Length: 282
Image (cartoon, rainbow, N blue to C red; front, side, top):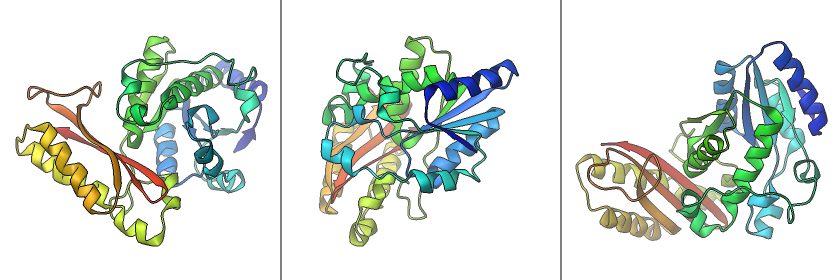
């Protein structure tokens, strides 16, 4: 796999592939790659002759400078992991390559309403950073299809809406969350957990499963279900920000007529902020 760091190098390769009529799939990441990322790359390979992966820890989407500084960076290890991944090209730019005029004065992209819900309410500016960097990467890579993990379900919907609204002509697809054997969603942030915290973390998935079973049993008092979920996580020693039952298509509050729902959770365990979600087709 070839690695490039500059947009001009990336564009030259993309132009060659386009001239040859080869479809391009794209998997954007922030690095510290794990089996969940490799599953996204494998899925991308199913849809295109060429697969591009990006690694960029985007400062614009961090509303906490300490969180940005602590985020794991392991480019050398990631390059070794990607060598056998089935990808064709790694784009690993620095911030100056992505934001040539600086982040403070550069153009930003916002997705109203959808980006202000749930994680957006607790991480001001986060999804503006996500939408902006993904739009830049889409314009550089020019993919036919982009693959995102459903663990970050709100992010997936925001990127899809942004791509549709800006007519970027990218097929944005989600892939089911890859989990550890005990149900914990794979995440680079799991490495922040102590051994004791790691033992407690699967309570998030267990809580979601219980809530899904109750919804499938026709419980419709969503506020009561959310309150129960918050209490269950508090009782397990977590600090939940939200437990929410939402409409799958737009993350708005559902009514009993809605059949496709999403259960979503964000909770702190020690220094790790963990998120997860489950689909519920009633």
